[in-house]
Every structure is written in structure tokens, then in C-alpha cells.
Image (tube, rainbow, N blue to C red; front, side, top):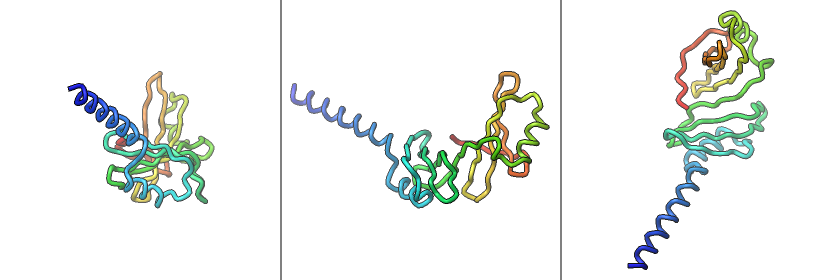
Length: 150
């Protein structure tokens, strides 16, 4: 009986360690797609949430997007990527629309979202009267609907 209890305890412990390891490492199919999409990615850190895998990394490609997060389905399908932007690098139309429509907003931050269809949106995070509001715009400053699934 003691041997059985000890054996079960060892198996449970090994299973827990293996599960923890899997949380830090995306499945092979996801990693292969990521390497194809970002061959010059540096030091990717993986996380898993809601059946999606996310890689946080530095993009060292000729486009040099810098620090970013790429999202993939559990089967390796590319969902989107999020790239924080400095206000000075955001298209002028996005900044102009933000300031015109949300005059009372403070502390805005910008993130470019690249989608699989090749289109980009800017997520604008605003502080209005102590409340946060997210707005999505295309590069021309036109507001768009977007369902961020992360």
C-alpha cells in the first residue's frame, strides 16, 4: 500500500512539473509558424491563455518593429501581433482624430495591431475622467470595430 501511495505521489508530481513546463513552451506547430513569421526574433517568452499562445519578443528583422507580442491559435494559426508605438511614430491622422474626438482624454497610449489580412489598426488607450477607454483606428484616423481576443 505504501508503495502504491508513493508511486501515485511521484506520478502526480511528475505530471505537475510537466504541465508547468508546457505552459512555458508552445507546441511544436506553433513554434514552427512563429519561426517562419519572425525568423530573427530574439528571446521569445511564451504564455498560454484561452487556447491561444503568445510570444513576447524583440523583432530584429529589417523592419525592426522592436518589442512586440505575436498571438497564435493552439494549431499555429497566426491571429495578430501587437507593437507598442511611441506617440511620435503614430500616423498624424490617428493622433489628430484622437485629440479632436476625445478632448478630455489624458495619457493616451498607442499600439499597432497587425492582422493576418495585412491590414493594421491602432489601438488607442485613453484615460477619460479616470476611466479607461479603448478605441481602434486605421492609419487614416477612421475609427474601426475590432474584437481583441486576448
